Image 1 (cartoon, rainbow, N blue to C red):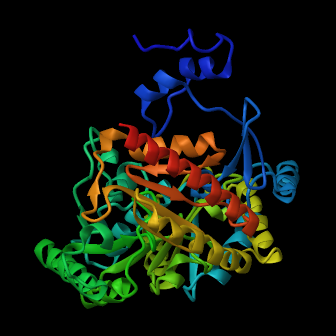
Image 2: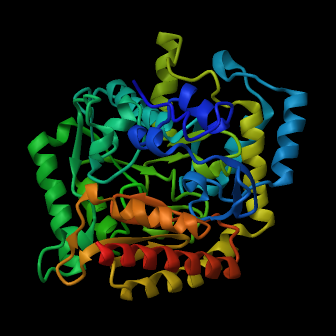
Length: 463
């Protein structure tokens, strides 16, 4: 029988009640029932408090998502006003609502796709599922019915549903779930620190990965491949920043075979990398785009897929015969979610968030780079207000700690002891603060992180 931890927490405590009733996502469930949950109680700006009154600097923007930080009154007010005015309306069967229209217009004014449309969902996972279905649907309609395969990358993260979970290239999201589904294939990540050959330059590395991609395309059959999906900077797979010419070489291969490029901006979108979109930082020309997370600063769940008009048109024309485009969600274009997301983007303009974040990122990246000299750090890497350190057993040989040693998790817990929330992804510790973080708070973040990593080094030495 699973230990409910009643001997550790009071029977009526939120911790005990959690262990009796909740099924946690993306959690080591055995560890949860051994140690109990961490309870978050309130938050404001870039800080969050637990139910014991302890304050933490939020170094992960929740789950890479609270771009404007916590407790923004304007977002609460617009949600309240929209709930009073129109609490729900669907987009099914030719019905619309003003917040969804205004948000779609705002997004189309921002994205690097000249003319297109926005399809709304609730999460990055369902948005990338939509991407798969649209790729299949479009190619069926234009008579290229064999073009169904999607190429993703190892270490990529695109969601956890059957489709998007197949796109994800991380083993824990496949094991015991019978994923990936047939039709999704994976190629190497642009992980120079781990995957470069001895003596290989960054340009040579990018050339080799482009050649590997082309070999995969030829092996699978170019006529069977619909699209390639990529995060501009890989987030949950270890904050992997591609070499500068990687996407240029990859896009030449995709263009040669007429393969579309799905740009997954779920983490990188809306200022995270120093530009409005990660594709602009990494010089990607997307066919379609996926948004979520910072679209509403996570105040309410909403996602979006942007498609160009030339992709939309045959889908539109097909309904003259079929009478229905048979895809959508009950909450697609939920008016409250859309109103909050629209006001969130307006506040980003009014507060000059993109410009301020780009300025703050200079100090952030400087402090991050200083961690390279730490005896435990193999590489410190990042771009904009996104970064990570990779913890290694031996700096010279890049020898990694075994995952079961839990070094990354230990560092994360020590940072928490010092009042900082970061996220361990195996031996990589990721940092992704709200975009509104100040330079002084960047100093606070890295001062606390230094204490956590020093504690971890001492722990390793003591063993």
